[in-house]
Length: 269
Image (cartoon, rainbow, N blue to C red; front, side, top):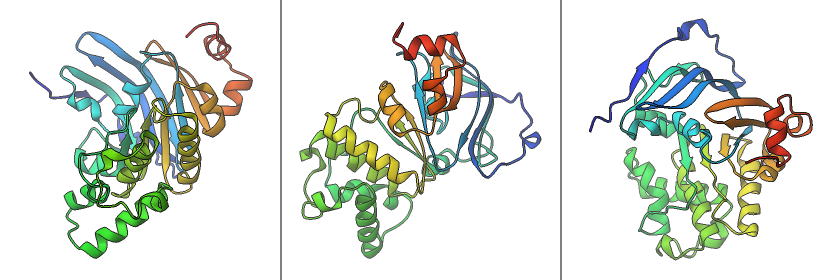
């Protein structure tokens, strides 16, 4: 099976001026899985140090689009992308090393996925792969990351215990801490609370609001109330197209597109 991604450059990146307030600049992005046209002409600027939410019914392309931002779709056989995706003005599908990209753009998945090892080793895993061996440095990174993920006080006396013994909400905050340990610029979250209870969900939302002071957060959510609570901007996807993208308050109070209005008022989806 050929897992090589094919990229057809249709835009000259040099034509686009770098804007410091924009983290990702996406222009005319098209994505195909073999013959299936999964994303159709998506263009958007994702702001720095804000929370951007993607909403829409299942199968509309929002998670597929999220994964183009750190090239997770490279792993899918027959995936082909055209268009332009820039991170701080750099073409992520050009000469950028994919491991370097994924250090800059971390990811938290829908279901908590801690490694079957100790809490400490879960956090230290990423820094070790990037060459950090000093126990003193690793200790500091583990503590800082767990504090940033608002879970240090719960776990500081259990660092040598298996991460698999934690509750679902604790496991998801541990996974966020693990993503933070490699000091990314962006954190992608693919429905990070859909498997969690309301209390754990609230903690993750509070955490995301705190983290946006230092990080750009891009979140896929099936929960429109969650988008209204925590996101600064929201994009509505439908059938592979980005139908509407604007400030969250405006999208939910005065949608410009009838399809957006129908979705957020519950007429379909």
